[in-house]
Length: 211
Figure 1 (cartoon, rainbow, N blue to C red):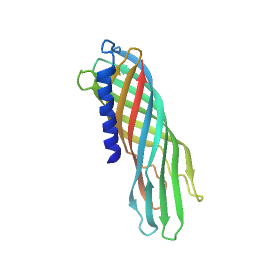
Figure 2: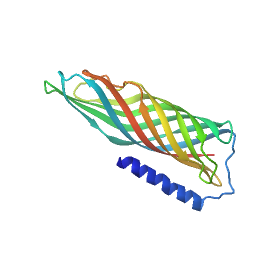
Figure 3: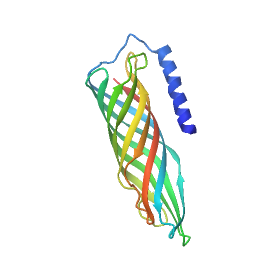
Figure 4: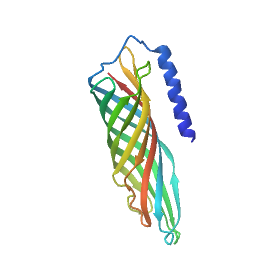
C-alpha cells in the first residue's frame, strides 16, 4: 500500500533527524504524569459485509484522507511502561455510495467525530530514538454527518482496537514523538438498509508534542 510506504519513510527520515540534531544531554522525566498535544494525518476506509443482493446493486467506498488533533495525558509507571488517555477531534470525510436495484442512489458521509483512546505504551529498547509500541481501544462518536437524497444517517458510535509503533525524543524544551497507528473498527457503524455490516479502518501518522 502506497500510504503505508510513505508513512514508514517519513518515520525513518524523522529518526535520522533526531539522531543528528537532538541534544542528547536532555532527557524527559521518566516517571509521573506528562501532558501534550498531537496532530495526525488519517487515511480511512469503510468495509461492508453481508450485502443484500436483491435490493442493492452496487456499493462504492470513497477512501479519503483527513486530519485529527487532540490532547495527550500520559502517566509513566517506569521508564518502559505507561498508560495514555488521548481525547481528540477528527475530520475523516469517509463516505459510502449505495446504488439500489430500483436505481435509487444514496450517499452516506461522516465529516467530524469526537473520540478518546485509552492506550498502554511499552518502550521496546533504550536508545537515542526510544522506539515504543502502543496497544489499546478507542471510542468515537460522530458529531457532524451528512446524508444526501433524504437518506438516514449512516454512522453509529465506533469502538476500535488500536495498535501503533513510534519513537520518542527529548529536546531541550519539549518531547517530540512521531507514531504510526492502525485502528481496526470492531463496531458496525452503518445503518444502511440492505447492508448488515459497515466497519471503518484507519491508518494514521501522529505527531505528538509534550513537556
